[in-house]
Image 1 (cartoon, rainbow, N blue to C red):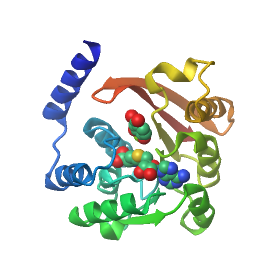
Image 2 (cartoon, helix red, strand yellow):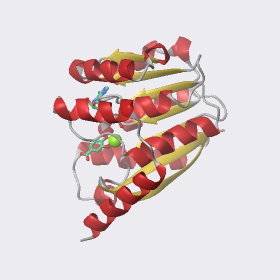
Image 3 (cartoon, rainbow, N blue to C red):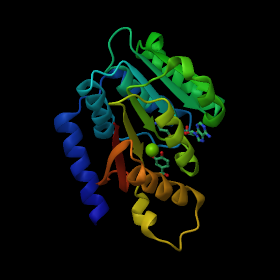
Length: 219
Ligand code: SAH
Ligand code: DHB
Ligand code: MG
């Protein structure tokens, strides 16, 4: 019952506030056609990322976890002409579909997709840093390591956003032995302890169930 109402409210919010143009809709359709898991950020979350990027006048964005590039498109559209999103994706097939979706959106000059495990791509990004905004949304077990890289590639004012930090409340279940849940818990704990970060997290409900977004600013 709750889930139904959350979805209904998400539909209302999206219908009322979030216009998705041809390119965004085509990206979701192409992902579904290719049987990619439907774990893109929701349209209202995508627009939230877009607004964050515009609020801070971001020019350089790092995304960890591309999937079909739906969140990438929202982020890239927030940037000036000479802005850049570097997005990291493990699965070559996901990256291929993302590249098509991003090209269809006319954003290929603003987006670079690096294929491979993010932990192998990250050490190669020194010359692209510092990033203004970093969105972490890949394999959650590696989130603590991604946070370390995010800090390394930050400046005062960099914003670090994490997706899926609540996972139906599982992060508070000490008995949960899932490595992704453990990674998410440590990701949040480290953000709380880290002197360089001012961090918070918000629980969310909606069409994707009960989850959360973390947001932190460096400095
Ligand atoms: N940000 C996307 C959704 C990402 S889903 C959106 O909102 O549209 C998570 C993605 O992370 C998947 O495509 C998965 O293949 C990728 N991934 C998983 N492990 C990874 C790793 N070690 N390095 C890079 N990408 C990884
Ligand atoms: C799921 C959702 C996500 O946003 C994600 O990044 C990974 C998995 C899920 O619902 O399973
Ligand atoms: Mg996610």
